[in-house]
Image (tube, rainbow, N blue to C red; front, side):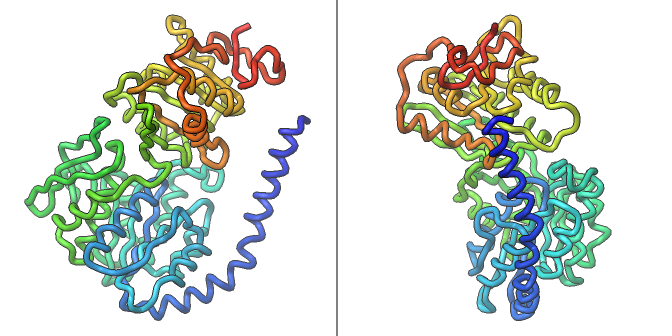
Length: 431
């Protein structure tokens, strides 16, 4: 076993140990938070869950409610039962609202949080294949997330994605009123004429009770429309008119790592979607890139997660999708070699793969030029793709695009250790 493999294994064991024993010392705090929740009877407590979009929906909802009211919200993406408790402890009886993000990564995780939170309003953004190992099926995922809806009291409201059948079915578990959102004609809050072609940001026409309103946001990509609709729906439940809610949305920037743009002084724009990369989240990000207006469209893809089957087949499939959306595709990480199986015969330099991030950063520093749009899609805790941006800022561009020499995707041959052959960046070359 190499040193790197041994370190990776040690990190995994440490993470597993923390996950196993952390609830033991957190449980007392969670129990106290359940008591403290009783003091917040006047506060509108909003719980938000879903397979993706939780953090964005939380930020948008807090902005809508904050346009009239005073309150708190979950910090960053801290959504475990322990962090639900911490958010409640930062909320006091004089606060008008608390917007709390609630995660579910295994059976009973949300089941522990929902009785503590007891939301007056519950939002479910969607159900996807995140945490596949924990739930094994979409139905099991939906059952867990539905616990938040089941915790809503008779005078509360559930805000549900009407375009997702698994989410819509949760209405049967709600004792209170239900508001649906989506693109479907039957949704209570419906979006039409959705536009988000870069460099334009997401906008759409909202339909509610026979009235239409144009909504403009700072979000990148059509797939965020559900989060915006959910935030407006929560505002309506709190008595905030849609026009005021829409005005509040217009000022909210994307959360870091969730399709958040970074414009550099040299004219290159990065869009960071590098918080996580479950397989089912890849198509919306690539669709954003495919439709974008830019000199060249570049996709940088790191570690994928939550997929069945072999690594090589999945990475090759994603590479084919990326090649349809981008002019240049770079894969980074230990499984990047699988992407090379999709190398196009007529475009030998269109698809590159690097085992180490340094090699990808060096290649892009030479390759990119003003007007390029670069999508970073990966898993933050594994890939750290944001360091590509840091490296470019620190070292600057190296002039016009250079012929890729650190790696060329013409062969699936994977060069791991031959430093002399692969150069300092760890790229993959044909043999």
